[in-house]
Image 1 (cartoon, each protein chain N blue to C red):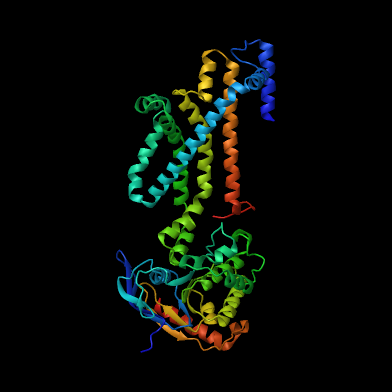
Image 2 (tube, each protein chain N blue to C red):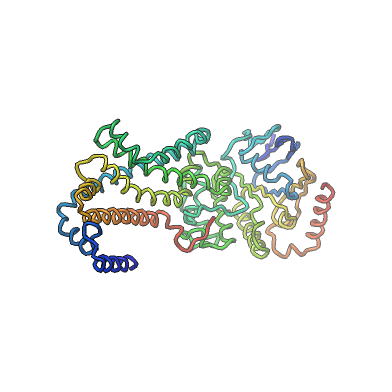
Length: 247
Length: 243
């Protein structure tokens, strides 16, 4: 039987009496871009903490390929909401951090990715010398260079201004279309999810469950003009209602 | 500059008011004594430098180890922390003679005095630094699979460096004072000894030479620490604003 890359089966989590996640189940295939879309406070961060192994689910299992990774750290590569670059490390050293934590460092590959991210010349700069968008790009490369097979992105662009965000989305998409990896992307922005993903998982309000699931039909590579197409707006409306209905 | 002005005022006041030298010598007299008695004085100075550096190193070691231990084992922090504060509440002047009674006139009681003075600022500063580690960065490190060891060496320790250096600056200056006090306990040489001899023979000029030596030494240590800090925490320099 074919096994999904990441399988989350019927996990539940509660804090004291507060049920945050109940019977949540979904899968992510290899090299697929999946977004988890949910309103604020729908337990999106908790889902990542569970997959990242900071928390253990009360019930259910999380599989990565054939392995159960409940409460185990180090199986995912992670990009948080804020760039979270270490201020005393240069960009190059920061970008290598994900690899460093797992063992080996590949400086050549890192330099190559830095060039792709348009950060050439900043290898030896410190994070505070970079703009917000540049820091997020560095943070993404760090996640991309980490050896783990799945990358979890936790609302990575939500702190950026509108224009920078659009640039970042396009950039992320172009990189990803080039270097396919499995991505699990958490967001509360419908357009962002539609523009980037292969599949969108809509969460209900607490306790979180899968409220709806959509396969995004747009072909790749995707262009910015997609945002204004009728079909895109049609989909946006559909997802919007699925969010509304459940909350 | 201000210092120079102070000396000039001091000089004129001392001369005009006709205060006898044994009460308040003029700065020039003190400088003369410093030059003339140099061959006599510098063995004392060397001895104090040696003692204070040794004590500071020991204080640094113990201070850091205590901080790391208390940081990694939060459950003993609650019980040990008050003890640390108590250790600073006992006046050294009272404790010093006791230490001599217990440990004799050797190096050990002196080391204990200096270490006692030096370790506390380092421990407190390092602990605060560890505690202030940004939660954002910690969360990233843990999610990315950092082990506890990696978390400490790659995040918490470097994060605590600026704070740690504040503690080091205080300790470095204290170490000179600690050394002088410990020499009062009974030593063959050292600025402390020189000072006691000078004041009991009313050589006030020599007392001032000793005071100036202590001040200069403290400032020197302080600037060395600042230099090391600049080098180690250089990422902060370029007008950095980071949380």
